Image (tube, rainbow, N blue to C red; front, side, top):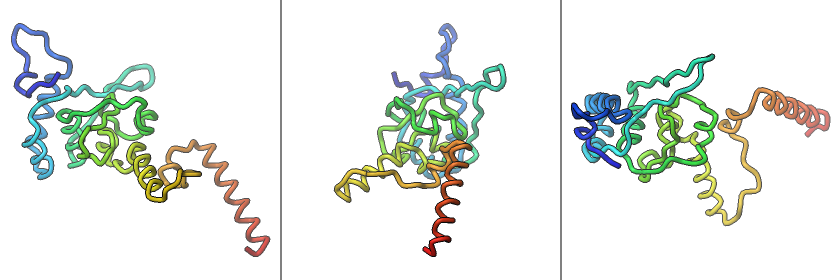
Length: 189
């Protein structure tokens, strides 16, 4: 159920809609930002698709709301897209949202139906890692394989994959690489 910013404002005798006051504050702040791409986006999008409610996470024994700020253009644009864009909540989440990697301001992994974020979810775009979103990487792998005309046999080792490895997995990889280098040194190859 979409609403304009004005409709999100509570009427005196109504219960406030979850996130409506916060959403209105964020939209006001977004409209004051000097980012040209954001200003053009906001001019074209005035119907709020979903109110913003911050993600929450456990810190020790207590639940804490995620913090966010709009100090960078990609962060402001990601929150604007989350609030104004049509799209879908992804199930399953992208790998970063599943593992809560990076600053995740929104509680859901949301991908806009338009290509405004290049196929990334709003949380990855907000964290400045749009190209690191597993949705973008999977789509790119499909595109490359389609161009090659065959299915991928193994996934290439990239820095993104390394970021998702546990400490023990990285240590094992390091050991394997040392062994391989030693064998090559000894064989003269």
